[in-house]
Image (tube, rainbow, N blue to C red; front, side, top):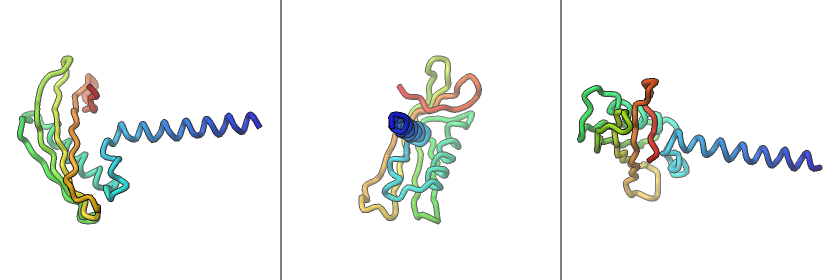
Length: 126
């Protein structure tokens, strides 16, 4: 019986850990319950990458995305370009509207991406 309880406890901890890790990877996941799809997330992430990966990125640069399948779409705007601990960083504001959400307010999320030594762009948590 103790083994079963321990196994269930470990399974619960692992499930919570996976959800927390997914939230770090996809900060937009909190809107999944109101119609923000995996494809929307992929399109939004590609839109952001088209900005922060530009060698000449500057404040005010904007990229948009639209998912015909879900009817959702949005935009990403560069709000700041700077160095942080010897890394190039870009602050972005992502805005989008969810077609089928009862909450018609514009959704917005601010994120920071920094280019680490390996050349990858990572989300910076300040």
